[in-house]
Image (cartoon, rainbow, N blue to C red; front, side):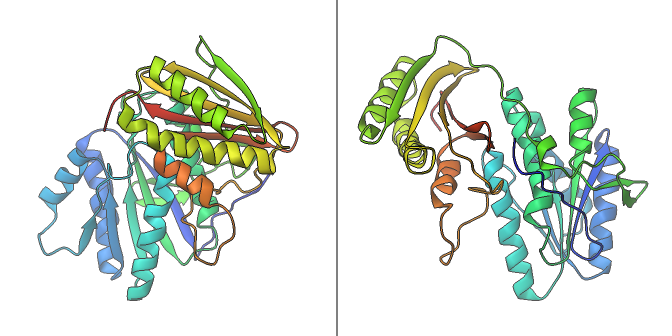
Length: 318
């Protein structure tokens, strides 16, 4: 559904490793070994893992160990915000003149829906594309295989060019570098659906429709302003770049209010909205803002199929 880009793992650039483990002891063994390698090489170390995993590491590391811990929960449950976290850390360590090693265990156990899990896998694949030409750094992705669905684990394995076993990384023969693989099919909408076709001059009607449907779904008013701003950005993009018109559908599912936009446009950059815009950059700011405002954003796009964008907002205030 998108251009068939291929991503290869360079020897001296970004090294993206999956570390499948089972249980606390295996997590500690792999993560501590990876950290020690970095400290021995005088590399910077940044760790972003769930709170219980962070506590395990802190209990084993000396207080003097130069390891930076990031709050893994800070970006929320939207994987579209995660690339920028590592983008910022790479810039910070490059300024210090040090290579970077990171450990990033995303919030798999907190993924509440199949859509969230699919976007987490897509994020793992996009890391290869986002940092294909970056300065040399390594990212270890621990993943607890205990009780995991074999199909989901297989999909995740295909996102990582390297896999760590017995303390060493080796090429992953199952890695799939084709963007066409990375998109998973959207889940089916959940009725009843509300639908509205829109074109130029209809932005007010789009916002009114979303406001009405959000109220019927009991979306807290504290979340509505952010959602309406995101809705306006997406609908405006449809009108400007999607053939001048689009279709809005809304529904509620899994304690989430969903707004879906369909149009005839094509987004040719898989990283659109996920990499922090620069002052010199042109475009991409709208989708970046949408990712910051919504709890989950799904984008499926292709030159033949057009573009579908789903905005998820949790039906709980936070």
